[in-house]
Image: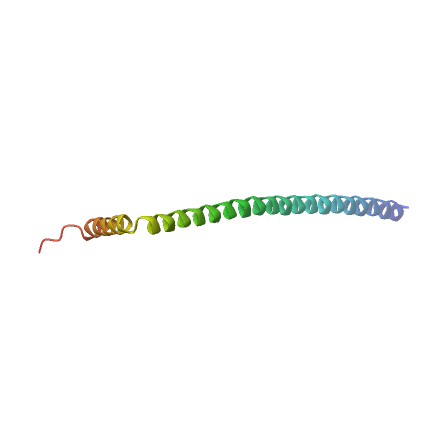
Length: 96
C-alpha cells in the first residue's frame, strides 16, 4: 500500500514538474518573440532614419555642387581659406 502511495505521489510530482516546464517554455518563447518583434521594429526605425540621413547628405552635396558651378572663384577662395586655416591649426608652433 505504501508503494501505491509513493507511486501516486511521484506521478503527481512528475505531472506538476511537466506542467511547470510547459509554462516556463511558453514564457520563454513569448519573451523571445517579444524581443524579436522589438528588434524588427527598431531595425525598421533605424533603416528609415538612415535613409533620411543619406537623402540629406545627397541634398547637401547637390547644393555644394550647384554653388561650385555658379560661383567657382568664391568656392575656390573658401576652399583655399579653409585649407590654410586647417594647416595653421594642425601645424601648431614649432620653434626649433
